[in-house]
Image 1 (cartoon, rainbow, N blue to C red):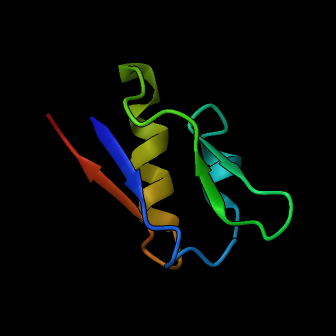
Image 2: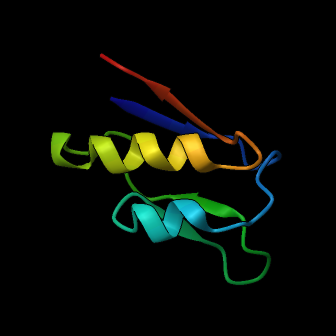
Image 3: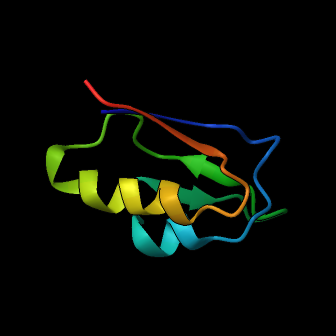
Length: 65
């Protein structure tokens, strides 16, 4: 799996950080998503998919290998 984020679309809701904190974080100044791991291990796939699904701005994009 490859993860990309569109910082311009991110609204800073933070659901991705709550669901997959090993993969996502937020900038302190504005809450915009920070991608910590663009190629997470398989055990993170379910959480990453959930994060993408609940993102209100649809700012998380996944490419399944």
